[in-house]
Amino acid sequence: MNDYLHDEESFTSQKIDWNVWNKILVFMKPLTKYAVFAIITMIILAVTDVVYPLISAYAIDDIINPNIVNEGTDLSKLTVFIGLYIGFMIVQAISVFLFIKFAGKIQTELAYNIRKKAFHHLQELPFSYYDRTRVGWIMARMTSDSRNLSQLFSWGLIDLTWGFSLMIILVIVMFVINWVLALVVIAVVPIMTVVSIFFRKYILKAYRQIRKINSKITGAYNEGITGAMTTKTLVLEDNNFDDFDDLTTDMRTRSIRAAMIQGLYFPTMLFLITLGVALVYIVGGNLVLELSITVGTLYLFTSYVWQFFEPVNELARIYAEFQQAQASAERIVSLIETKADIVDKPEVIEKYGTLFDYKLENFEEIKGDIKFDNVSFKYNVGEQVLTNFSLNVKAGESIALVGHTGAGKTTIVNLICRFYEPTKGKILIDGKDYKDRSMGWLHSNLGYVLQDPHLFSGNVMENIRYGNLNATDEECIQAAKAVEAHEFIMKFEKGYDTECGEGGSRLSVGQKQLISFARAILADPKILVLDEATSSVDTETEQVIQTAINKLLEGRTSFIVAHRLSTIVHSNRILVLDQGKVIEEGTHRQLIEKAGAYHKLYTNQYSEEMLELSIR
Image (tube, rainbow, N blue to C red; front, side, top):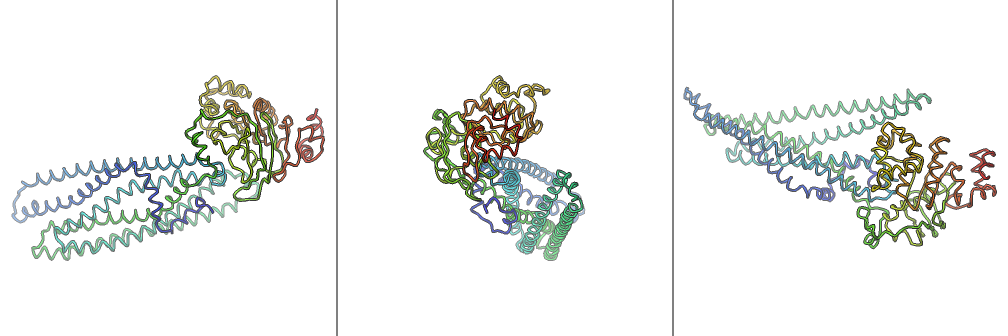
């Protein structure tokens, strides 16, 4: 199984892989200055957190105590106290503002850098990658995983810096003031750290399991709603409810367990802190009675016991999240480092450029002669599809591919488009192995119309213009008129400015198909592939689309994969495929008169009357 198909939980028990994290840290290099600024502001913030109790201790020893002992009122030092307090409040406020600013910058830019790199690489990967990789897996890498890493390296970095800085400064200050009480406070910290790490690990694991079950519940909701008709016709209501009840019961049980662990954590930490305070009062109280330390110093150390809790808690949380983020880091790296099955050779790239930097001046004009020279092909998983397959197609010729499912029709057109490459043999275009020219050169001369064409979010005009981004509005309209799409487009309230919706959801299948034809005509490809272009439309719409197809085919080398055989009766050649081999070849009339496999396929679809009409 490929790395990117691992289940998420399989990563959580693995040790930290520093090699993976080093690869993620590369994305932090452009953000180094923001990280440095953020660290500096957090150190300043940690200093102010340590100084605040010192100011309060100063107030107790130099303002409150003297007034009590002397039974008088001397507030001469109160102004100094207020000034110090306000000054440190301002410093702390500025530090908080700056660390939020820098952390937000790091989070946003890091997520952007990761997603940009991943999306750029996705454009380079061939069709075979998408053919074997779940869309949900890719989307999770681009969204949740990149977000998890950006949060860890931004806010996690901030909290880590603050936690370590605060603890180090606290230890230094305590030892400077009184080493005995410092040892008393520090004695509690290791216990707090171990307990905090223990609880944090299990809390995070528990909530991760809850999120996983919640995803299943969401999926069950979706299936229950979208499959309501099937559920009722198969009388599966009770069965579906039982499955759903099992999921929700499991989530309730795990949620209660997680809440109990969370509920035990804070009282346990509170007990340890209180224990630390008690020890400070016992030891420090005696020191006060012996006049070894002041009351303000005793207050200071009790405050510092409480201050140790937050950084210990934060460090334990970050450590647990860092372990869990190992999965996100590995998945992101596996995506970015996925090797493309199909790449241009270095000398080809030097001449023709890359997918992102074409050297159009070196692109030769394509005529459209295509030759399969003893081509064999096998998918990574599956049986051999083609074995020593040969085929000669002249420029401008229309080739129809028919046969049962699994005969090799789609494989042939995918090889022509170089979505896959032959495992043996060659495919020549205009007499030259297409591996000696770039994929950009081939794809810029290629048109591919699918059974269910994909339209992008945007209006009709924009979707047609995708065929040629430099085309004018008038050229787009002429393309629409050429395939008889203009009439129905103008019936829309906003005409060519009508929004298509995601994937063309606001248009019918036939309308989407005609717009995709207009887009193809605007691109003016030399090689055209139509894959089941009329199988999802009604008979009336099929006639309109067939007229558009006839115009689209003019002067182009074309390959038509069709189940509706009425759409290919005018093809120059029809190839009947079976298990990757051509078992019959000829025009529609020739194959009907031969009364072989094609005749059987055709008569299974249409009546004898239609058969007579088709060969007149």
